[in-house]
Image (cartoon, rainbow, N blue to C red; front, side):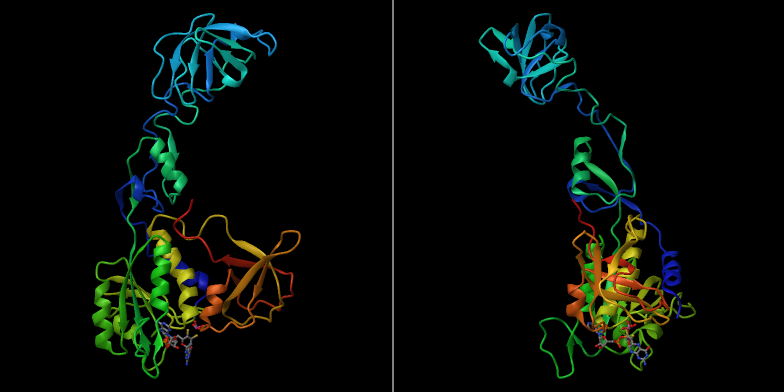
Length: 409
Ligand SMILES: Nc1nc2c(c(=O)[nH]1)N[C@H]1C(S)=C(S)[C@@H](COP(=O)(O)OP(=O)(O)OC[C@H]3O[C@@H](n4cnc5c(N)ncnc54)[C@H](O)[C@@H]3O)O[C@H]1N2
Ligand code: MOO
């Protein structure tokens, strides 16, 4: 058994970002930038009004007050998309609307609420400083400015920003293609009629969903029976994928075939088992040239090892750091814990807050790696290092929040 950190390091060392491809902007949400987004225009491209009102010369209305307005001659109109072509001279004003270009000669906008207009004149009842209610050209960004750095997972806000920068397509890392293979004579697909000793496969669908949530394309290869032929035949479907993930058949039982059948002859597995719970039965190597991540069969073990090993692989393949920035996260323990043994423990737990806002993680009393109902309900995993001494309620612990994924606003 090797420590989790070492297993992760050995596994992640074999992956790097996938090549870039070009996608249309509407398809870029959740993708990771391979090239920075650089503005193709200056925004706003011209000095623009920030309010509906009147474009004026600030000096002309320096003495205007609510009781004694200054009258200016109205000479035209500037609406969004329809600029006023002339110049505002002394004693003149142009009707203007939010977003419209401020005409030459004017240096401020007065809100229409402070003005009274008739056909020929506008009476301005408030003095404003030069620059008031004008968004000057480039006030948001300028042409050739780097707006979004490479390596960022694009949010809905980023898509809007790139659109504003007049960019119709983006260079992003190719999505990882992940093949997922369940194993075991006892496993059936959801909805199939079940034999007397059969159970429904949860793991492959859960792992495919995890892969999709992390931005990958998942290919569910189905369920291999406990024979070398079945396993080899279905695993062949992973050809051309960036990763083959198996679940089940990873321990040392008589029917646990994954290691023997799939690992290339002569290739040593980089990881054979890890000092973690759940997830001891874990392997990593290559099968027919495709990286192979062999996860355990117990459903919670497959889910947790998916989070600890599959998720960072998918992030690295997309050009992201293995872990989300901002970690590690911490909380207070909501219940005491016994001393830990030599395996790093990942306890399924709920999160709550104390009256003064502190985060509290309370592990479920039952932690068996086959209890899927509690795993689905958990808000976080509490990480207990190997040989951790007994812990009191209230102690600070490291947690892994069970949220996130590729779609972010
Ligand atoms: N003598 C030992 N026995 C076991 C050990 C050990 O160290 N020595 N480790 C235990 C641990 S811990 C785990 S985890 C499992 C891992 O074994 P495998 O990866 O070989 O998994 P299987 O034996 O194939 O299945 C275990 C369990 O999970 C169920 N399963 C399998 N696939 C699915 C699926 N797709 N969906 C839902 N459930 C699945 C399977 O029916 C078994 O109940 O080994 C322990 N044994
Ligand atoms: O490796 Mo097992 O995952 O502890 O349930």
